[in-house]
Amino acid sequence: MSQAAIEAAPPRGEGAGPFQRLILQNVVVINGTGAPAFGPVDLVVEGDRIAALRSPDARQTVSTDSEVRDLSGHYVLPGLIDLHGHIGGDEQGVPAEYVYKLWLAHGITAVRDPGCGNGIDWCVSEQKRSAANQITAPRIYPYVFFGQGREQPMTTPKQAREWVAEMQQRGAVGMKCFGYRPDVLQAAFDELGKRGMGIACHHAQLDVARVNALTTARWGLTTLEHWYGLPEALFDDRQVQAYPADYNYYDEQQRFTEAGRLWAQAAERGTERYEAVIKELLERGVTLDPTFNIYAASRDVMRERQAEWHQRYTLPQLWAFFKPSKISHGSYFFDWGLEQELAWRDNYRRWMAFVDDYKNRGGRVTVGSDSGYIYKVYGFGTIHELEMLREAGFHPLEVIRAATLHGAEALGAQTEIGSIEIGKKADLLVIGENPLANLKLLYATGHPRLREDGEIERVGGVRYTIKDGIVYDAKALLADVEAMVTAAKRERGIEQLPQY
Image (cartoon, rainbow, N blue to C red; front, side, top):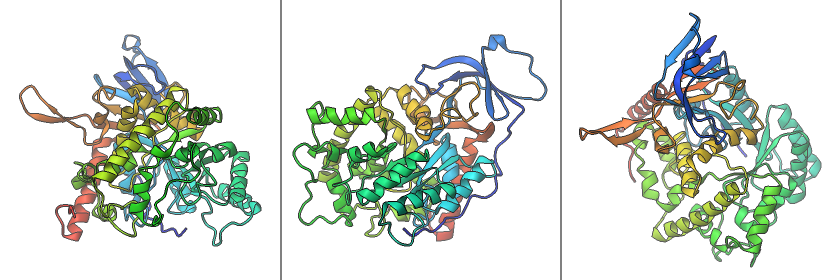
């Protein structure tokens, strides 16, 4: 797979702190564990760690070296974790600074890059710079594409094991695969497991007939990306998807049209096959990272194409990448009509039911956005994923847990991040409204609300994103992004992103 690195992030010029002591007074806490909100409390951060949660009645004399912020009426959550966050790529043409600032503007403090499409060395360099807070960016967990960096395909299990060892030595913490010859891929899984590395898989149609979600679960899969491979594991009256005779996987419209008909071919909810598959996935501890939002245009393309943030926050080069194209992945709306949308709405109904069942039986479900494709913009796509988990049946507290603690657990980072608990990293999101009442409040652009005087105002939007105790003004970061977009439009001589 060829790689072309995008522009790396510039040195950090934003954020205040970390402070010897930072006190967020009078906040309401949603701690990410599934517990209900509680407060008001004073949340105390010392350096980069959460040091105390105290009742205002137990407030101590504030020392002169403390940074104190009275945030009465504000809610504090753990920083959000996006488990499917590509840092863009040369084909999208977006700089890393644009991507990172959009993520932080939405309260996202940790991201797994599933594939390191800019190259493992670039990705690990950005990971280290972020860990040292040399750049304005979330934490980065680099997962490499299977076979990345090799000039020739792998043909033996030994080569797969050697490749895993090399990738770990270069800084990868996990792998993402699409499928491969089973004996070679299984060897990679085994080696990754022995080394304590994560394994994510998008079970692509070219290999799913012999390697589906149950196959990889038995090999040690840690996270199942999207849903490919799952309906195939649920087949009970066939073994191969009902492809039309003229199907060509490289035809993106055909690929996604038929994908929208796949769940209808799987075993129905409650059947013997359905129950057997869900039971085994649960027993094997597989995490589902559904990325519902990335396919949302398939069920209503006009909604996604005309989302209100595009004109101000979508770079024109990214918009050009979204345009229907025979060569751009995920730009498949060559002739997308009602029949395709109806099939995808049914697809979602069945898919969401499975994910909700999995959650209700104790399975871990996480939040991943896969933004940078199909009209989904970094940060905005992550919040839409929260909305779609809610649509699938999750309680808002379950949604927040999926986006925080469950994401940390999937990364093996739960002792450091993912919940508001004493001793953990001070990775936090501060917002002036209650997101449990309306998850749309978490969009960086906020939510329009009619006031008593009949005027509409924007409410919500993250106020502060805190990472390692460093306080970022989320709205200022969003303003930086808007300035980037304005400048890029000016350079191209356009005022509005064209609608075809």
